[in-house]
Amino acid sequence: MGGGADRGAGGAGVCHAWFGPGRDAYTRVGALLAGRCAVTLVAAALSAPPRPGPGPEALRVRVIQANAAQHLKWRSDMIPVFWERRIELTSAPADRPPDIVGWPEVSLPYLAGSNREADEAIAAAAGGALVLAGAQRRSPDARLFNSLVAIDADGEIAEIYDKHHLAPFAEYFPGGALARRLGLTGLATDALGAFTPGPGPEVLDLGRLGSAALPALSSISTSPGCALWSRGCPWCALPIPASRR
Image (cartoon, rainbow, N blue to C red):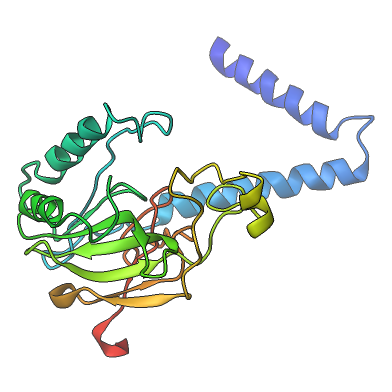
């Protein structure tokens, strides 16, 4: 009885605080609306049917993270450490092997396409899964791109996407040639220089896995059931139904 009386007294105190003397009409109406919204949200959450799990044909995606702190990422003594972590995470056993393995943005410690032996090591660790890895890519005219490369089971780079929506003061320093002459670079750039934006959104052909639309590396989709990656990962990769390819 005492507990019920205490709760009743507490509720009465709250009601008096919100609706008693000294409260204007706007406050009272706001409190009523807030309470109604809260009740509606709780009721909706309780009545929502459970979300079905992925079916047997659903793609299995593994996203790895080597816990590479930015200030350690490019240290010569730490590059092999993070490389081995990524290889081990990529090859970790699972009840059902992944179809796709995602490596973080700029996670390859070499320019894309410049180390075939390393690409083959990634493919071997993936065990037949397609690997989508962030990399720096140098074009024939010496421009630097923040890219996504698709490494197939043979260690070949099957597809390339160059990020086109770059973050100012991080991936490049506004001001172009003047900024370069002053030695100003972005926070996310390194000794290679600032990034060049890619041509725009693209659709990558992922072979037997279908296609993936990449609006921008920094625009991440969280829509359940359609996005390969969740917020916080470097890419937005959305599978396209066969009927729309």
